[in-house]
Image (cartoon, rainbow, N blue to C red):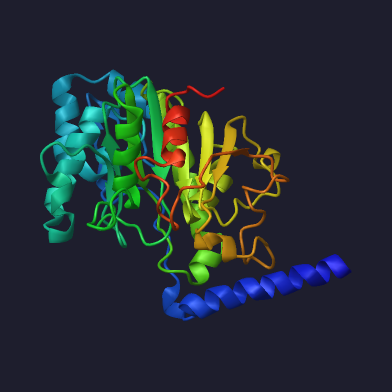
Length: 347
């Protein structure tokens, strides 16, 4: 009974932290973008070489890969031209086709906030303009990489802000660039803003609703990488992104799951995640996330602290990390450790 009382008090404190930071206004809640991309109805009605096109919602990435392997170049290019939003988001489709399809899809929006994504040299692996927009971008040569990492960001990230000007080495694209530079050639890094993230530190950030939707998308995304022959990725999960990774872990095709600045993973222990992947955790000494109570009660909070000894994750050195977003700053022990994990150098 005393333990229950402490849990209630901690939950109340979690509510107070969230409410005091961002409030409980209904406008804080964001609908999760789920389901197949726009244009899927027209895609389902089409065909290629006399064959029905794979359903974007029900076909597995492996079925998609087999379908495209049977097509010639002209048929592939015609599908990109006719259905860029579908091909660009179709896990299991050839990577060059997705890059070109998403370039066309970005241009088709005519939106200035997305225009830079269609610039020379950008490798956009997914793009969905619905809601605040979702995007995944590749840094390095994903087709030939010996090692692959995926950066899963937290709150306040979307297709427009994923590469926005901000502090160096922060944000999804900034973190991915820093990791790619530290890990070097032979490694590809994907900045995956592939789910609807919370805005601010409000009710969405305190619950798992958006993370649950994101976890389904992340698991499918990793299956798509496997379907095109990419190595099992290392997932680097920042802040609320670690909640997504915690829920996706048992279904995601990953070699390692690394969480940083985590409010919890909705599991009591690393073993409770149900994954064969190695689990790592980092938290800097000045990261404000340490002030968020590690509870899960009545749907609020995300559970145990992944950096606690009882959780059972491997610790990543982070003593020189400053703030909540400094984990990928060059010269830090955390980035050096991340690069070693990304390259498979740590056993």
